[in-house]
Length: 311
Image 1 (tube, helix red, strand yellow):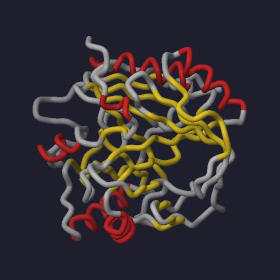
Image 2 (cartoon, rainbow, N blue to C red):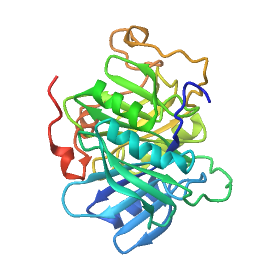
Image 3 (cartoon, rainbow, N blue to C red):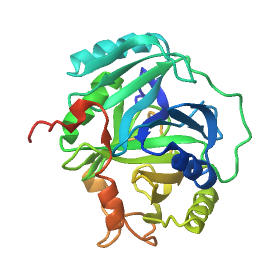
Image 4 (cartoon, one colour):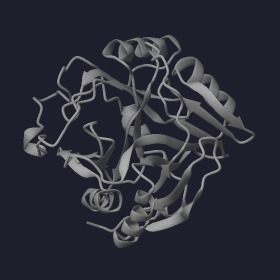
């Protein structure tokens, strides 16, 4: 096992969101963003990419402001589920739903846990995988990563390390990048004054696909809010957008692949010239609208609105 990997988590599978208008969401995410309907229920819609995951987004009908229900991670093996449950308790979190069969269309077994601030993670095993598909040239393949805000970055990082087995890939002045597999990062924590969802990144098959997707978004009235650019940590190309509900979403590609020889670096290693926020320095943003949207979507479980411990 590489030292840059989790003994329990193989990757990020999907994100569950609560939204007030599933019809509008379906139109946007299928006709514009590039996903397909994997399954639907009276009060839920499941959307897939062109990869093997059954779905990447599970959208649940709920009135009021959009909310993040949980982040779903896939366990490496069946024994990992019990190990994660025990580690969660030791790390100061709680098991919200104990290990049991899951009843969403992907099936499998899983549990749901939360950290001390109420961030909820579902861990699944033996869920449905699709047969290998031909990768669409300009459509999302899978989720690349999710970034969560935290006013207590070190405490959040420590929980993810202890409860989920992630390791730190890189630390910048404002963000901790957490690794569980060959991708440079699968979770990241942004150092902010709230515990909102920062953004969801969708992996595209190529840099061209990131740009073609941006053109499709622009044609449908959704401007680039940050990009085009190439990040430092992770070395991935990107364009950021805001969906019709205020969720920040990213097209990304060429995510750096890492192994046991990768050396985690700190803030002093990741600095930019004045006025630059990525390697290229050619794109717009981050726009004020993007920065505001990165502070608006909170976890649906009650504890997510409780303040974290003060510094």
